[in-house]
Length: 114
Length: 110
Image (cartoon, rainbow over the protein chains, first blue to last red):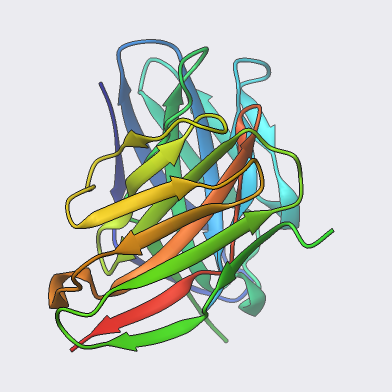
């Protein structure tokens, strides 16, 4: 069984500030982990993924995430927020080598203030 | 290369009406998925198809049926719509470990 918990349904930052979106997972086997972004009225777009290679994963638009097995976490960060980063962010987990049915978190809405 | 396309973009139904949501992908992917997205609930899997000719239930299949018409197309049918099915529906296809999502269909059932 697998599950994802995203802490905070809304995160508010000022433009230029650090972005930190939290994701903790539960998986009975080695996981694949993903972050997706959803802009208003659009589908989901892959930001980055961890598939058992490097634990620090870099994605698009300056985002990165670090897989920490001991903490069962995969938090998403960006050093400096832009107004264009305002969107909904979803963390997802699937089982490595399994049937690939990902479980999604409930999402975190990132609000960026000027 | 259009990726994953969905029709219609918007739909309003009355309780008890039926409709089919269409999804097509042009990336030659084997696996396709239908999700619903509700506020504060994330994405929940309705049905998926691992390959042409096969379909399986996901987390929330009640009230829905699907058809994998061919490798490109995967449709979702609501036989008798209920207000609880008001949602945004996303179709996705998969290549290895990565999913590709369509733009969604926003469905309101009154």
